[in-house]
Image (cartoon, rainbow, N blue to C red; front, side, top):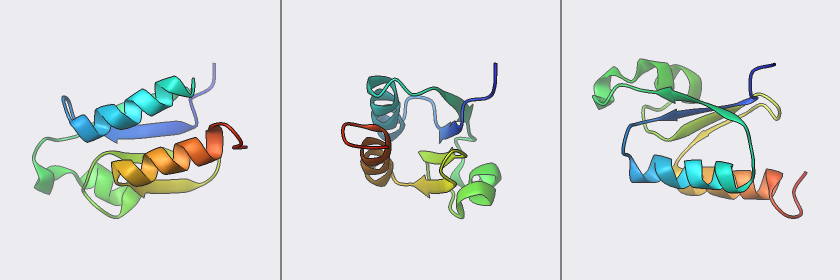
Length: 86
């Protein structure tokens, strides 16, 4: 089976990350979780992909979109994959 096109960078027990997970699950989207360092200053993997160290962050290889901020991600996912989306 191929890798899911969406990778979610997240923290354990992060309410903003859980919000994104809930939307991914509601939309029935497959995704890969990458748990990141709790120490903000050590989240270099997230900084490399999204330009910021904040989580949640997603990379969607299907559309070429990379973004952070849970509200933006939720809006993107619903607009792209939800009712009336692609």
